[in-house]
Image 1 (cartoon, helix red, strand yellow):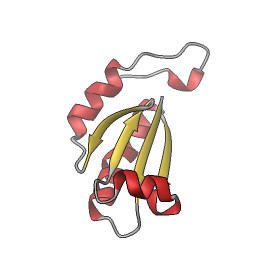
Image 2 (cartoon, helix red, strand yellow):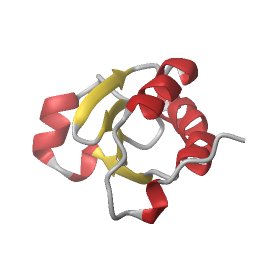
Image 3 (cartoon, one colour):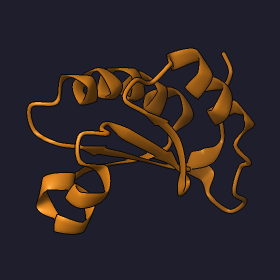
Length: 92
């Protein structure tokens, strides 16, 4: 699984979203990528002030605020990809 957080410097909502994501990354072992929209003119035009935007495996799952429990459920329901040992989940 891959989670992408579209963000920019000085965005407090982005910082809050990242605080939600990091413990879940440890639990679900997803790949995390943070993308600064100000580094790309097209991204800046696309997202502007609609950040943070969070994608899970290429699908937008949240913007502005990330609900921890709702996102946890999405992670639990995401299909495991075979042949990738890092995606094995432990519920203990």
